[in-house]
Image (tube, rainbow, N blue to C red):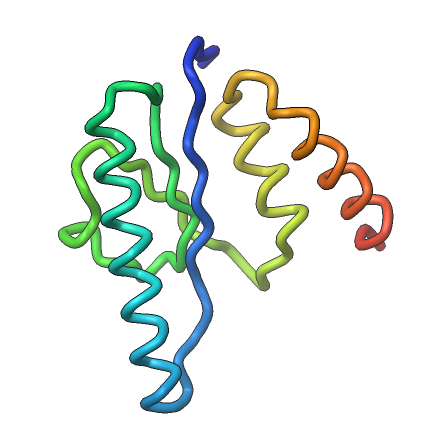
Amino acid sequence: MARSRPVLISLLGGGAPSPAEALVMAAREAATLDSLEQALSTGAFDAAILAADASRRRSQVPEGVIIDGDEGPFHFGRRLLGIIEAYEPPEPPMALQSVMLRYMNVATP
C-alpha cells in the first residue's frame, strides 16, 4: 500500500518488573498514545503505526492507529525494517536510512 504522506511509526514495549518501572512504563504509554492522537488529528500523516506488545489493549489506542504486535524477542533494527516492509511508508528520511543501515550491519547475525 503505497502512501503519499508520512507515516508515523512509534515503538512501545518493555516490561515493568518493579512498581517504579511500572509507573514509568504507564507514563511512556500515555505520552505515546497522546502524541499519536495529536499527530493524526493534524491530517499530516497517512497513518500511525504502533509497534507494541501483542497484549496491548486495543481500547486504549486512539482511533486510526494501527497496532503491529511484537512476535518473539525484540530487536530494534529488525522490528523497524519489518514495519517498513509491511506498510511501505514513503521513503524514510536520509538520516533514518543511514542509522538503519549502520545498525543492521552491526546487529545482524
